[in-house]
Image 1 (tube, rainbow, N blue to C red):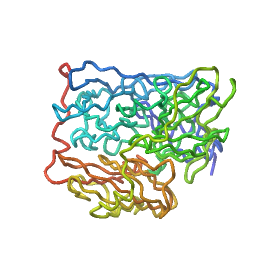
Image 2: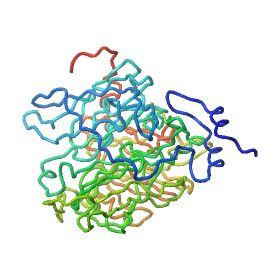
Image 3: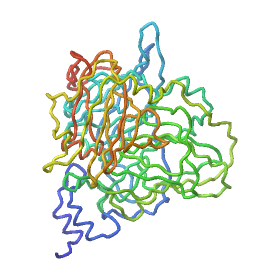
Image 4: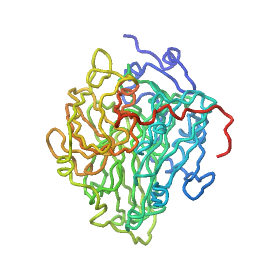
Length: 510
């Protein structure tokens, strides 16, 4: 086959709304070590943290926020502008930090009302991933806001954890998130805040995502025949391979894998430990020390890095090892650089007990009322669950409120992994291929990495008191879009996901 030039590939490509859709399989043949993105020198750009969003107003029970989804031109690559689809003009979007506070007089936690205004030019819906929201505020895939519409999402803040908000539009989640529609949402409670863990500027969110860029800076989206999206540029908080200056003390990191498809096997260049303290749904019972860990799309892990052991001037690289079925390029073996640049007093410490209220897995298993099996497969060119694709009129599980269930999740293929996300429910991993879960994933989770030829058993409680329909899907969002998603319904007669539809602009004041 005649080798195609980059110019010819651009002639074949289709520019869509600031992104460029190209047949990347041709690019891989042309470029052995990259996908064609302009070169960026790793660790040459400074680390950034997204700003914390302040409420528009607050009252005795609720904080009110406003976020506009719109297109913006930003600096990602040196010397080039890139169009993103953003929350408030940035990607990641602004971080919302909230408190889990219980009000006995109203029998409710302190709420957030977040108004999302759609000025981005494509239909959107917003899922606050990890929050036990009512169905009409959960970001149901078909409850979409058209351009020129807005919706006020109500969040109960009933879980203290590292969450994230992102687009969930039916059949377009991968594209919309890839273009920038993602941000972090952190909830803390008094129990956590009273622990001597690193706080304030030493409590650092990290949103990890891989990208491909055209020569002019546009983002390139290609799902390789509805398989996956794999970038050759690794970003943290929107910065390619950033360099973070740190003090010689402990830091708490909240890491989210916001990549569309790529999984990571992370380790430190010094071979030192990550001290794990939290999983998707909050703090673990006790810390766990590991040398490396894998993280799939949408998983969140919290860990402590202790830089006090290093002399000033030490550089520590967060490295990425190889996992099956990831496309490897130049520099995808590294993520970011920590450089110890100063001395500071450190009054933080890591307690031996972090949470007391996580029941043993064996106790939850003894309460289970049934077991369900879900097989995630590729069949006749479709991504299916138990042989079926998405159908909003079909319910594949109907637990009663308060039921504890065991779900067995199967991936019997060697060509891909599936990070499975179950909305509403926090669960624990019982086993992985009949073996104990990894030390760093022993806690409450809502995303379950089911690797190649793996089976994972989980146990969780469906504690919704109102009931309703919720989604479950693969969080390789290319698979989700085509159409590896189903739904379960808690009880009977709960609120419809469409019971509070988006409204046309202009919006009244919050």
